[in-house]
Image 1 (cartoon, rainbow, N blue to C red):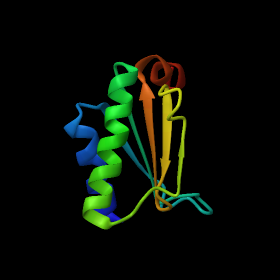
Image 2 (spheres, rainbow, N blue to C red):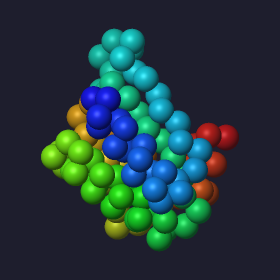
Image 3 (cartoon, rainbow, N blue to C red):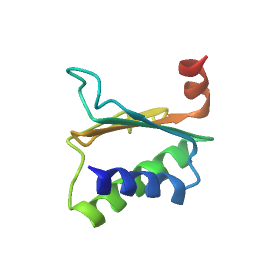
Image 4 (cartoon, rainbow, N blue to C red):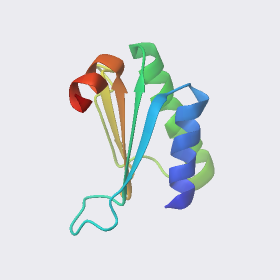
Length: 100
C-alpha cells in the first residue's frame, strides 16, 4: 500500500495538483479503503493530466490498474479506486463545493 500511495502522490505532484490531502482510514472500522487521497486542479485539462499521470506512475511502480475509474468523461471530479487507496481528483470549483 505504501508504494501505491507514493506513486499516486508522485503522479499528482508531477502535474502540479494542488491541496493534496491524504486521509488515513485504517482505524475506521469497515472503511472501504485504507486511504483516501484528494487533490484539486485548476481546469479540466489538468484534471485529465493528473489522472493519466497517476495511472501511469502506479502501473509503472506496482503493475496495478485501478479497479474502477469514474467521472473521466466530465473531468470535474474523477475517482480512481485502487482497492486500498481511493483517489479523488477535483476541478477547483468542485473541490471548493465539497470543502466549504
